[in-house]
Length: 124
Image (tube, rainbow, N blue to C red):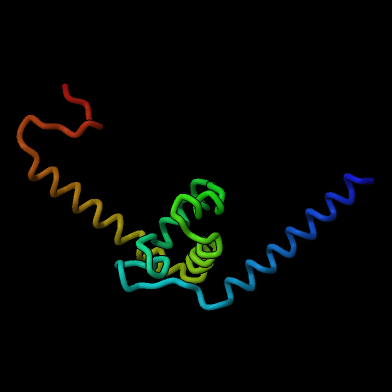
C-alpha cells in the first residue's frame, strides 16, 4: 500500500515537473547570440549545442551539468528547448563547427614540421 502511494506521488511530481518545464520553454529563453557565433546562455560563453551534447548525447544529468558550468538548471532546460525549437539553426551550427575543425586540421597538416606526426597516428 505504501509503495503504491509513493509511486503515485512520484508520478504526480513527474507530471508537475514536466508541466513546469513545458511552461518554462514557452517563456522567453535567456539565449543570446552576442558573444559567440552561435546561440549561448545569455551573459556566458556556454553554447546551446555544448549543453545539448552533454545532456542529450552523453546522457549526463541536467543538474550535474548545471553544477559543472555554474548555471541554474532552468538555463539548461532553456538551452535544450531552444535547441529543439530551432533545428535548422542548430544544424547550421554543427556544420559550421565541422567545417572549422576540418580547416584547422588541414592548416595544421600543412604547417607541421617534417618528421612530426600527430599523437593519434601511427608512425612507422
